Length: 243
Image (cartoon, rainbow, N blue to C red; front, side):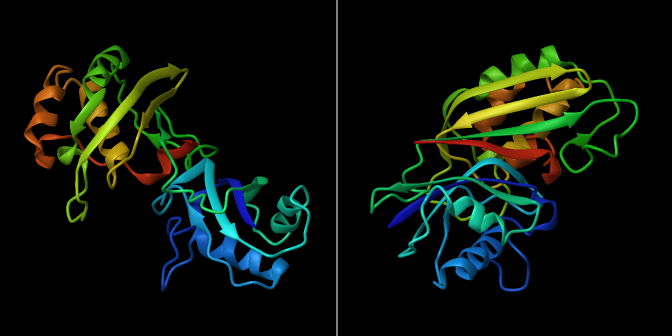
């Protein structure tokens, strides 16, 4: 049976999703929990390989199993073996050839900036604290230039090995609620650190260091040095995977 899981996790204590040789990962801990209840050495496939310190509200994963545990009880059984910062929210049977990453049509990420005079201990692991007031209207105008199909080489961390840097951004929204500014991006795929670099560029727009209209030329340039800083991982969260 091919089983799909819906996961939520706090990535603070993990070296990302993907299993590492010398570091603790979400994939490793999840596989160990499943192994403990099924007695099987399963391989869990995640829809998105979130980086160290990055969170997920709607990560999707799948694995093959011969377990006789009823699907409705499987989340409870797995959660009983997981630490408190990882939770399985749902388990369901999917087609034999379902692949959480390859079948994904889009992913939605959100980056949260805590834009206030003083930091908050309660959200320090889930938002990037930035004390200088940002121009959200300018950030919104700049966000429109990211929409559509582009080569996003300027918004990829150096050293990444990918066949193509062309991605399609369907939606990018910038909204402020109180002291929190949320940048939400939906695309058919993302390059390494792409959302964190887009968010850093929008932050520079909010500081008036970059004009909103300059974003178009930054994208066209393909030059990483022209884009903004890479914001820290704790503000980033995988919200949803679209199939």
